[in-house]
Image: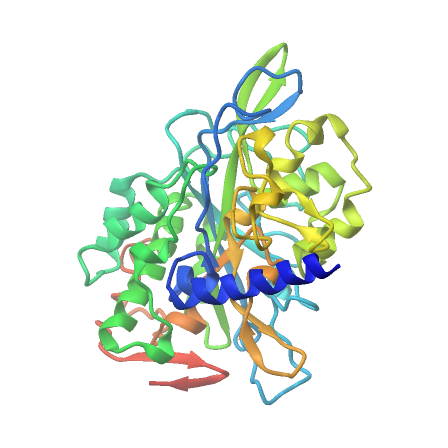
Length: 441
């Protein structure tokens, strides 16, 4: 007991040292001006189901993967409610909130406009060049979870470096390094189980309350570039395009960019292994038989696993993938960790001093660091120990809010025209920040 207590104290001291030393291990150092910490630790390809021969039906490929980016809408103020309103809790609160997911398809999910921040639409992909396939296990727009991979799920939705450059030009990005920064943050970090650097090391986004006008403009340009990429890739899908533009122009709604890690799997099909992609969220729904509504209703990963782990609906799907996704469980910390064990090419529990010292599991590859309410009533950034795993956000309420100019016949004649000039509709020079339910700066 004494040894265990000493180890916990030592772990705390180490964590404080790492924060003060700006080591990048913690969410404070790694995220900067974005609410998703995607620093990751690479695993060796020689272990277990990590790319070698296997008797499992489904295994994790050690190379490849990437990022799935989508558009989340919600009412203004629900992301970071007024701290002086104790009954109002952030929509992604660690104890009472929800967990967002992306949804594929050309139509809006049922109840989409009444569900604050639950379903991300218009997913686009930054993926590896190792597996030139468009197969993915997905959540469909009718909110069914695909039991088998969908062969054309990604077709036409991959993002190239030139796509980013064109989108940044269309929105009038001022800083010329923005396309390069976005590409370095996501396009060049698609080996999802390898070493990854926190995206904001490249993006250099700054929270609105700490930003000057130039930084606000950079924030907005980055967000608008992501939105423009979605509009470009979904230009043949009017329901998606119109919804994005409607929310962007709304005075009562806001939006966020949802970021999810994507893992490459090998799926035995007709005696032959075929590569297919999957997000940690879809893996959990597919493995534990959860509906999208059930999965998103869990406030954090830990609570989801306590209920779901004993309800595997497909052991064959789980057996070759489980630890790679959820990590090893620690009896000492009474929760899952970011390590997967030496046998799978990762790190053993005995080698780490706190649960997410190493970030090897798929769920720990993106950790939400946005707003949650603490027991004392304060609004605070989520920490890894809050177990908001598997997603991150770039939210307009934190980083920039350009003056909303409704589309009128005088500034845009058609929807297609608007798609090419996002962020340039009125030659904006004034920026507004939505902070704690008030317009500021």
